[in-house]
Amino acid sequence: MSRSIEHNPGKQRFEWTEDGILSVLDYELQNGVMTIMHTGVPEALGGRGIAADLTRCALATARENGWAVRPLCSYAAAYMRRHPEYAGLLA
Image 1 (spheres, rainbow, N blue to C red):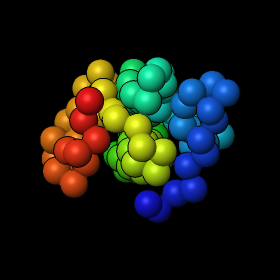
Image 2: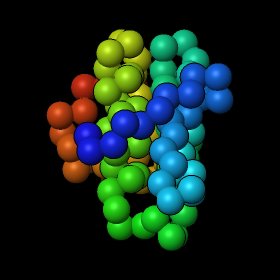
Image 3: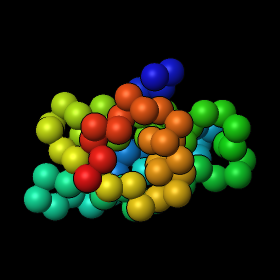
Image 4: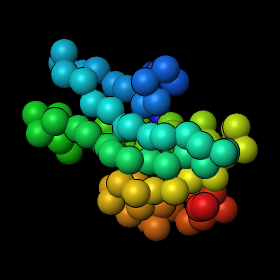
């Protein structure tokens, strides 16, 4: 991971601020399942790999905590399909 993504468990999201602009990955955690709801990277920051870093950090956190992952967010679902090393996390 090229960035130090912040995990904000109180808001159930992962955060990264670049050039004063916030990018987030929102999730819900219930019964040991992390449901990734949304990955939001503003257009001004697009193409920098921020969404990938947010997703990678969320998946690493899920793995460390023994959580399964349900990717409702289309970006997270596509990321998991492209990276089969995360297939074992799928709920």
